[in-house]
Image (cartoon, rainbow, N blue to C red; front, side, top):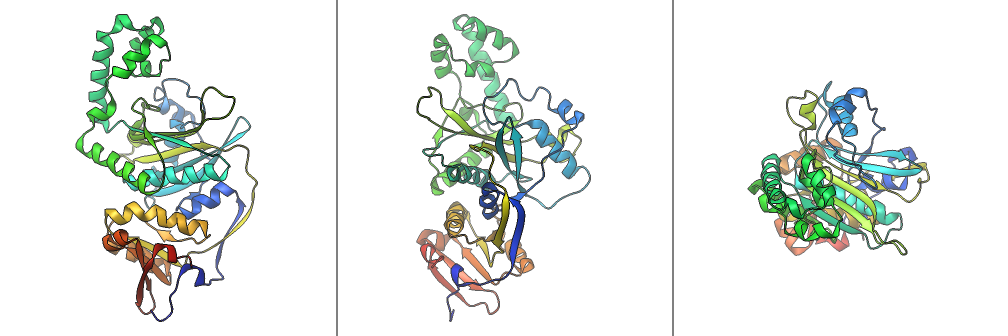
Length: 381
């Protein structure tokens, strides 16, 4: 390449203008999420959602009726291009919450994209030392096996349970795992864990999520008792919290899960999977116009190693306010190239297995196909 076209050297007079943007929206845009209007919940959505949430969950939480409403309004009348990567705002009891979701994909990179975006928005709010806990319930069959074993376990130890937990057991064994009675703690500790019953595909999905979290510099711990939203959750569940001075209990600032089966409840023949995070910001964010330069780059990743490092590259670019197009849920080179050509970007950023190992990226100029390989740290120079 006769003249290296790194991101900061590329000039453009074209911008995206968002008249009612917030800081959260700006961050989400870099990760490929676009703003969406608040959902309109109908009585039918509430009826379909009945029984999916067993008890009130403190802090920000996913409402299945919102997801059902989203599916109904989006998929019953048309077939949108998938995946849908969206962020929307929910105003709840004088606090602002953001819902970040990827709908229509079962790929593990979608889970981590949602988690990473939520994490970065919370960090921008001033939260420090954010704790991230993750667990996996597996697919429908995995969770059914776990539930059977858990029920048999607590039935065997029913006389050792606190009276309140014996009443919970009549409705189902899983809610006992949220018990805080001292006498039940040993039983909970020795109870079956959902990860021990994962199918091979569920185990692979969870392994990929953990690898990507690690590569994206997102510290996490595995919490095998994390079972939020188990009525409609599938595969990965996560929550984020901080330990605040003067408070005995952690402050939960985010929750999320992958979900499945909701589409079929409302008559959509083919299931539409999704992954959703809900985060709580400290106070309603200032709304002001945002002017974001349209991307001059399209990032193409080839192979699992490149996919593992993709969010790291996007975060490096985001911190320099350099947007980039990408389709991280797509694997085929031809599909990604077609998207890049359709968007008429002047440059490609390409990462394959070789580049991911060497911590480099290949920059290709679309007009003459000239290209050059540089270190990732040089992209923003």
